Structure formats: C-alpha cells, structure tokens
Length: 124
Image 1 (cartoon, rainbow, N blue to C red):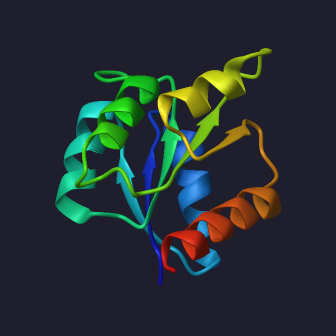
Image 2 (cartoon, one colour):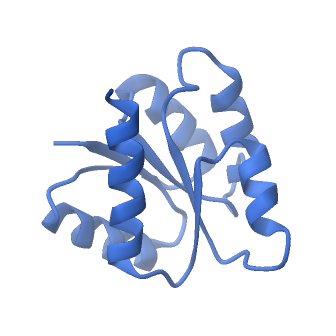
C-alpha cells in the first residue's frame, strides 16, 4: 500500500481527499502547513507527496525546491495540487521540482492515474 502525504491547509479539501484516496487503497498521511509537511516527509519518508502550493509557514513552491535539493528526499514524487491555474503556473510548479501538476477542482480518476504513474516509475 502506497503511503501518500497530503500537505493541504484547507480542512474541507483535506478531509475530502483523504477519505476518497483511502477508499482507493492509499495510506494517507496529513500535514496542515509547509513546516509540518517538511517534518513529516523526513520522519515518514512517504512514497508520494500531494502538495498544495499556497501553504502557511513554508509555501509549496519553496518546500518542493527544498525537498528536491536534498538527496534524502529528492526521489519522492511531488504532485502540485493547486488553484493556481493561470498561464505559466504549471511551468512554474514543474520548475520548482514538482513531478506533476493538477488544478483544483480536479477529477479524482485523473489524479489517481498520475499518482499511479509516478509511483510505478519510482519503484522500478
């Protein structure tokens, strides 16, 4: 069972996504801000991170840059989950180190497909 860390400050988004992904067989870890997310990554070493980009403490852009710069965490795939849907936002997220990008609201089957693709590629 893949361990997924969701770093999301919106309680409603967090609760909905955790319930839906748990029903699909994912073990869910939760962090409510960037600082807690960073600590959880190092403590739990999740298989994949779902990263909100607009976070308190450390925003998702900076946290992704930090994780991708560290040899201990750089191989953990990061999917940006964000309401940032302006032209250039996807490129900005990928440039920060995100492996994928999904705008809110998202289609769950599309998100799960992206998650499975990254998880399968990471376990070869």
